[in-house]
Image (cartoon, rainbow, N blue to C red; front, side):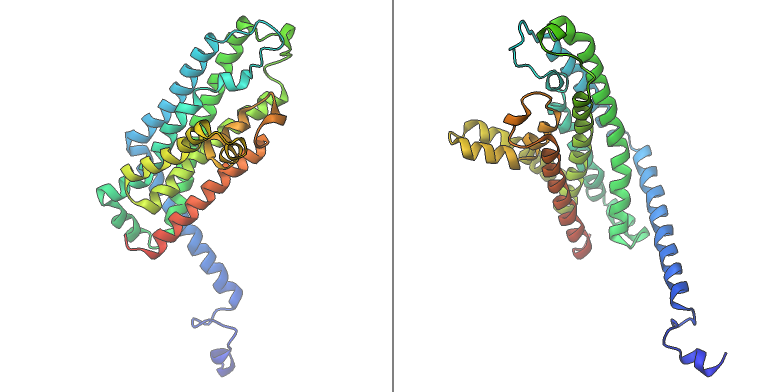
Length: 288
């Protein structure tokens, strides 16, 4: 090798050109990410708890939705019932199980001491967190889709017999608006799972994280219900993840909502991004 090649500042210490070094670094990151994804998927498959919790999301959403639909009665075109919200009533409870599943995905690592082994095997902490979040998102999304599909099917079978018919102004239960409501419900449950994972990463204690997540979800609606100031009530409904997110399920009275359906999902996405960012910072800069 010539002296010029040995001292060329454009080359790295191993003598490689910059683009080759960058490619090698990218390949190393991708290999680490693939390894982390495989390890986290193995953990998920071999632990029964998360699967049972996600199955509970489906059962609750369908059972409560069907029960609510069975008690609904519309006798005129002015009954003011939103069939999508009736069908998806069970999501109000099912989200708690999705939240617990998200918390335990991280919380179990800390409670069992497995976190030290995980971070020893994967020193890139943010890569590990990305893998954990990615593996958690897939099953939560599938469970959410099954829950929403089952609840929607139950509503379609039951509600026409309860007065939700064209004669009362309900032309279809499979319109574009209903499909948007179903998609919004699936995304909402998925975001709640990720939000919970981010909170658990920051708090590092399962019980505290579950309490904090459920508090954030249910505190805003409770506060809005007892506050006598209408403008303040509206603001609480706009910033609370539960009230904002459930607006995505609405198919009637959209002009009266505190936020549009997609704005409501945007609020939940901001809560989720904030929780994941906080969790990532704590994970990166604090000892496990």
